[in-house]
Image (cartoon, rainbow, N blue to C red; front, side, top):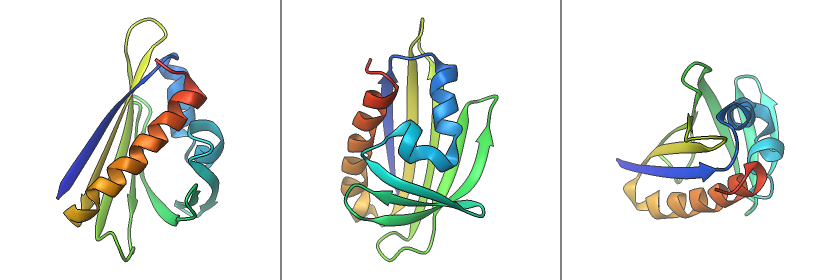
Length: 132
């Protein structure tokens, strides 16, 4: 299984970054607008429309305010047999944060594409929340 980890520096207080990350249904408005163009809640999931037209159902797994960590999963996709993601916000000095975004995915062959998309999302996050 491929495990992809992105460490994204953000020039903003971790509490502010966490408030955006934990808002599960507003990823298109508060976390990475432009990369995600639409999002709507559907029960325990969000239906996410990406910049490239892909639409994915992301199931909510856990939100831990103490650790500032959100986990989600994608199930039932043709190209992806397994996808677990987590986003954690860490403090990094005065008014700075780091977003640690980890995705475990199968098949391994799709990992380069997922990694490239995560890089694009990271740029949108930095633009929205604050560049480091």
